[in-house]
Amino acid sequence: MTATQERTIRTGDKLLGRVAFVTGGTRGIGAAICRSFAAQGADVAAGYSGNTERAEAFAEEFATAYPDSRMTVHRGDIADPDDCRRTVTEVIEQHGRLDILVNNAGITADRTVLKMSDQDWRRVIDVNLSGAFYLSQAAMAHMLERGSGRIVMISSVIGETGGIGQANYSSAKAGLLGLTKTLAREAAMQLQRSGNTDGVGITVNAVTPGYTATEMLATVPEKVLDGLRSKIPLGRLGEPEEVARVVHFLAADASGYITGQVWGVNGGLDM
Image (cartoon, rainbow, N blue to C red; front, side, top):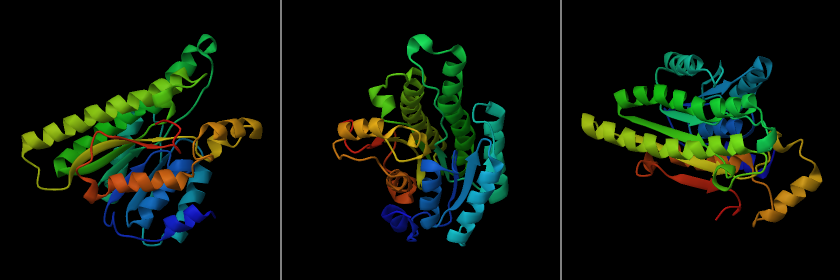
């Protein structure tokens, strides 16, 4: 366990009584966000796409580490609109409410533009961008009824800078920034129209992680990683927990005056 994980496990109460749904929540940055939410008192629903055995093992470990936080896992295909709506409904049915949605699930299919297939393009856009829209649409309907909620998009520094061989990924992650700003405006407009402005409100923000020490980078050769580190002003990869702390800050009631914003967690890679 790293020092950052130890700090994350210390319990606070910023999210006490809240229910959070984190897609791609059983590993990497998503798992770190789930732990950070639980450490602040939230109940957590973690979405995953395929590995049921791993998801159930994560849920068991989570229950041991955070006995006061209820954890459920939900399998679905983020690229499927019906699956997105079903999982949001499932979370609300099992937990009674949904206060926080984190659109974290994402995939890569790297090819240079001239070698990228139609399937490579469509699948990454469908999962990384369209899925976030379907989930947010379903969650926002529930949040507007209640007059409160938080939506956080996990974009990427690549959505801001571009990346060789990542036209599909960078386009999807950049698209999340436009989606964030539009949803933030629409949520505020809808609350104003309804007159339901007495609560903590609904905010929509994005976080753009840089190169982070997760499984996605585990297969990258050390020489390549050294090259990546040399481009980062702070000289190292990020930790998932460093991203998670920004997400739980944005999810808190006290962050109700922050909406439509993009928060970089990238070691200074993009300034």
